[in-house]
Image 1: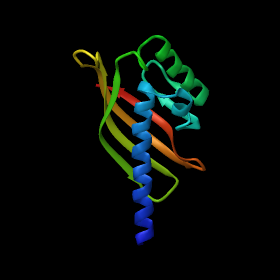
Image 2 (image 1 turned 30 degrees about the horizontal axis):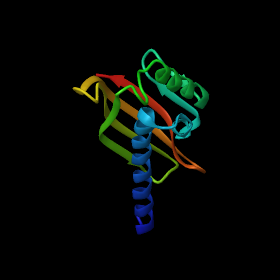
Image 3 (image 1 turned 90 degrees about the vertical axis):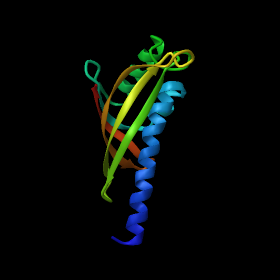
Image 4 (image 1 turned 30 degrees about the vertical axis):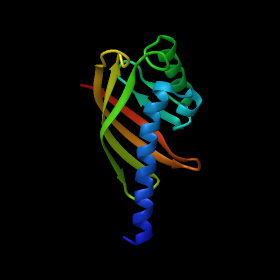
Length: 139
């Protein structure tokens, strides 16, 4: 592998790590249009009992979670991403696996409400790396 290939792979990995982080941050307190912009147009969000397909459907799910007070500003919740491993091979697709925790009551006694695993696939687009599939498991 040449130095240029190594640099590109490292840059790809860092960008993907930032996408994972921004998704969590935007789900908690950011603009939902920016949030959904981090997904590919044909993205698949596979959460047990609540799958979503495509940006419009993913946006609808995020809007519903905000409207119900489950997530978003004022909900006193946070998504925490840990143990993140990213796989890049120089192509326009990459993968990542991470553990996550969903914490509530962040202004009082923070409590882990849920935890699990993300199995993600990313695709390079003209706008940069975007999440193409997110498989979500609990536990």
